[in-house]
Image (tube, rainbow, N blue to C red; front, side):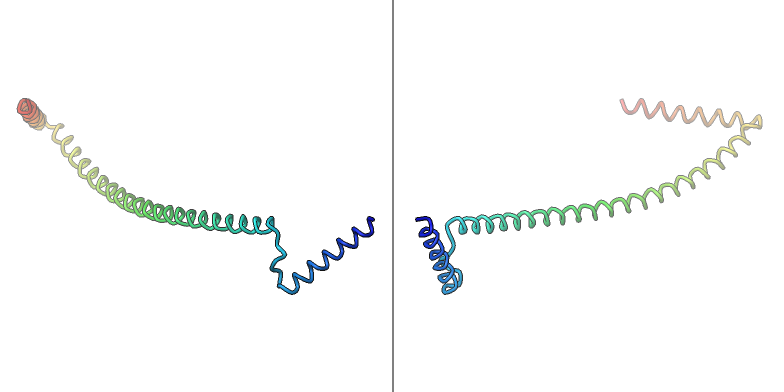
Length: 132
């Protein structure tokens, strides 16, 4: 009895192989094979969509990075210019302080400095009283 079953299985397999050879593989797929193929194509489409989304996000990040780099370069140029301006201003103030120091060393110069401070205080008081 088991030899007959084995023979029947061999005949079915040979029949299936000859059918596949005749039809080029059509008609030999089972529903499980079709489900697996559908699942594979579905996953490939999902992967393609995800890859496209990632590509778009990477492009956006690249653009943002380029813009940030441009802003940093502009800010560095502005800071360099400001540093140069501060150096010039420091030189001018240093020269002014030397002149004021020389003026303060003389007796008449001290009176002149007191007069300048008095005038500055008057202007500050007038400004504060006009704001009220």
